[in-house]
Image (cartoon, rainbow, N blue to C red; front, side, top):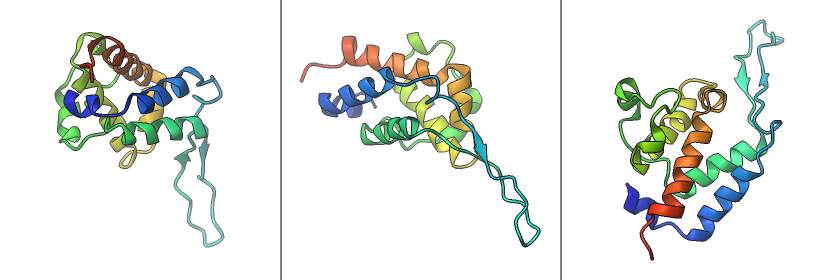
Length: 141
């Protein structure tokens, strides 16, 4: 997995880190919408509304192949890294990708998964681990 990350252009990584560095408190707030009763009597399911900046970060994680195909739904049940990324700083960079995948893919099945990563500090820990890998461990190209 680290080789897949290393194959990504440095400029793309720079865009991710620049965007992460500009995230504001407002960008990290996650209001919810929906939940109101509709004309037909049904109730719309509530859903999180992520900021444009968070959506851009998630898009870059896909572009950088940080979001990977693997059995994340099983992995997150057994890893000590989930849900708060405790120990991620000392884990292989592949675990940062696995954890990012768990939250990003988890959002599709459980609204608010990314919000949980924001609130627990896991998302920031993922960015920190990816940046350290890029700055100190990424193979020279």
